[in-house]
Length: 454
Image (cartoon, rainbow, N blue to C red):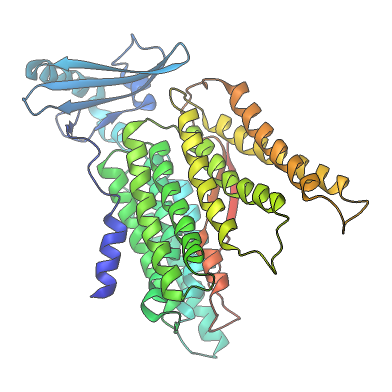
């Protein structure tokens, strides 16, 4: 019962309502909740908006309607909220039905992220679920263990494929579902550590896999219910990731040697708070996938830079200086980076390619700074000023990020799934840190991965 209560709190925390208005469908069958760019190209409902992004229809408490059209005009994102009467909405739905015609079922089913979802689920099943579930059996029979892993790995493709065969899988649904899969693995590990105070048993692998599967379904359901775009889903799952990192850090701020239940509990609480913060951000601003990538970049590198500056300022020594100050600055830097990235993206519409350019530009600046620091300290690697090493890193990272964002400007407003896609899997790191019951079959899927969609 205790586990169920924790899971309910954690997994449903981000499912709060997105607005006071009630969103209603555009068609009479109730299937089209949002008109995106792809659907608008087929229906041509709003020809007066050449840079159309999306349209939504809301039912107001006074029984009137609001048609909300989001477009990108003169380098800025613009939302037009047009009042509509009940009769006008009826005529609009009749028009939509007529334009859809006999091909309506095909047009309505958006499976743009189904292939990506199935690929990642297959990889996660083979590298994560299969060894995790197999580790729960204390068997030394190599043939049996291998057979179990292969069966589970195959089912990891087959079951999602069947379930999504005739179901929508938009970019937003795929993003939040995969976020639930990867973060769910970490949540499962943390819950098991919390309840056992670190004395985990053979149940930890199967339990982590079960929570991961559960959060995959919940992420998909929440994204589907709220008609999330990919950028919105990304911001919410990045919030869950950053919140878990910050919660873990605060545990070490509170105690240099925190108990397993303390760092696991604060990590879970932080992840829940991060999901909530991401939801608030998504409520107040429209994000593209590129926008979310900028926030992710600022948060990640923001975690790194403040501790570096502090360590240089006090000539940090692990033997005499506590680590809690470094960790606290890392948490503060992460929060500050997210706030900075969020503020920079207000009124902007970065495409996926432009968001990727910011990630790569910032990383390039960091690596150049790191290289210069190595060169400056190469002549004397024992007695050198820490600033010689730190300042180039900070300047390089900040310049790479700032120049990348500035040169892109307002962004193109393109809503494309092409470009690089980065996935962070904190469950892998957690799995690596926990004791392994069967070293030959550890539950350690990739911690970080990237792929390019063409």
